[in-house]
Length: 449
Image 1 (tube, rainbow, N blue to C red):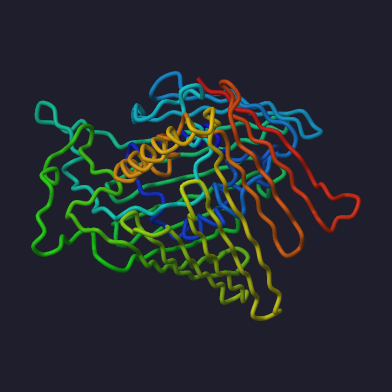
Image 2: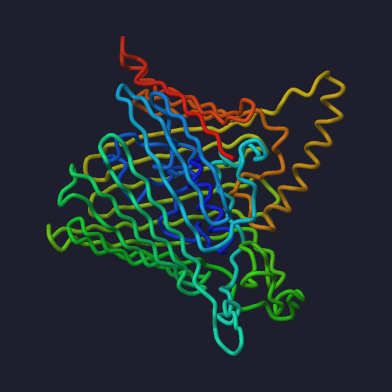
């Protein structure tokens, strides 16, 4: 289940039109996901925001956790958590953004269920060119008065007084600065800070990183092959909105084509290199991804291949959206030095509400399917697919996720809604554990206003 603060941050990215999927860090996001840059191992009560939504490596709750959140103004949000995993604790967090967030509702009673439990399959959207710099300019009486969009976030965990913070700022239409920090007496030097400068031109993206932990320096990049979003195809007339600035900064949303091109797939390649100045050690990895785009008429699918040449780890994954309600994924890992291998499979199945009798279900089901297709396509054009396909709010009853690997580790997760509460319950099972077959169970509740 997506944390409320993550939902607010996604709304910030959506409002500022930053493409989170055009990054090497999200190359395998559909199957594997990605842990937060702040190590969740240092947090006493790690929640689902320590993990991104994924088909295979999704988070199963442990113990009991209850979140109460609110967006009091379009610029300020707060959240409070009560957790019990054998030790009573919790956290409280606050978020401020200079960018008004009127795009989506934030109360659980009015939000569609997929907003907090977004589909794990990440549908990539067509690339868009970066905004012209003059679209960001706001003039008054001959003076520039525009400011850069900024987000501030802080969270304090109790009873260990672990503090984490986030500073996010859009510098230019193509660059973004992100600084994460964590303070904990259990960490070396009492904490760490990670700074990341990201650049996204559409065709390629790059990220430059520095961490105070071991004085780590790193750089990673991603290149998209195919048509360039900066160069319209010859003979194609751009739409009339290309040279017209919309409201706000006048930016085109991700996924909207400015040249009328319909690309059905995309091949991307990337790599990362990092080196620790203090421990004199480094590492690198490289990977490729092939994914279909919304213009593809068949079942959407994504294939990835990643390689860590120093450690000898090779990982390949295949994910497919087999229907409007079903997604499947598989991953194969192999080490060329030790010959160790691993296999994992996972699925995600959405359940629709029971609408009554059989005849009524057929007639209403046909209308519902037609309405879902229309609104999903509209969501793809608006770039809102990742925020949960809000169109199916009244029809979704819940979502079942399951995974299994060759060691017999099974993860089960069910996410749904009761009245104005969104809940997530799951279990981790070890089929080879003998008497201790169940490793853990948990329930997570969330309410926002």
